[in-house]
Image (tube, one colour):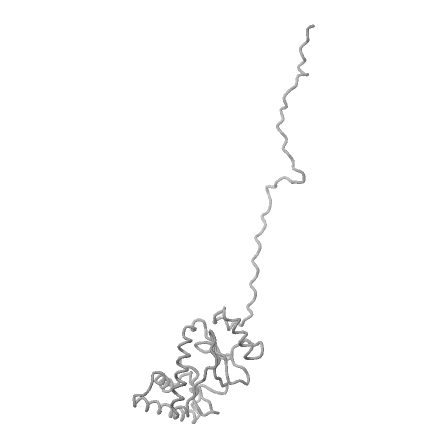
Length: 222
């Protein structure tokens, strides 16, 4: 039996279409126009819990001093009462002591400042005539950047007591006593420093006058 050839239509033809892309269920096709997300903003810094006047102090010592100051004052008031070249004074109503805290830039001078103050106090107390008209504040406590020392809010700078005859008489007496000691060859360096402060015109701001005590009060020697 002779077989007839298969018709062209019945022959299998290869598909001309390429493979279909696989579609993952639930996935959307990638977008070419996605908007980039903005970077998260850093948190705003918390406001400082210390006064602006504390900016000149060593920041890492602020918390310890805050606790000492609250203990001293018995309240939460952190503002200083007076400022000087070395630091600031924190007084408390009704007390005859105050906390003095050194600026960060002057902290290197603190040991020498305290040494001079202690030395001049000892030298003045050793001379009864000088001690009758001069008194040096006493240091009661020493911290990492502060001291607790004598303080009297009623005193005034000696240079502002020019109209007080008693203040001027005390100054004259103190100078005479120190110059007499100098002539005798017995004036120490720290007393020589005190003599210069007394003779300076106007007198050094480190010298105050106490009308109640009738004495010149030395509050600093730097």
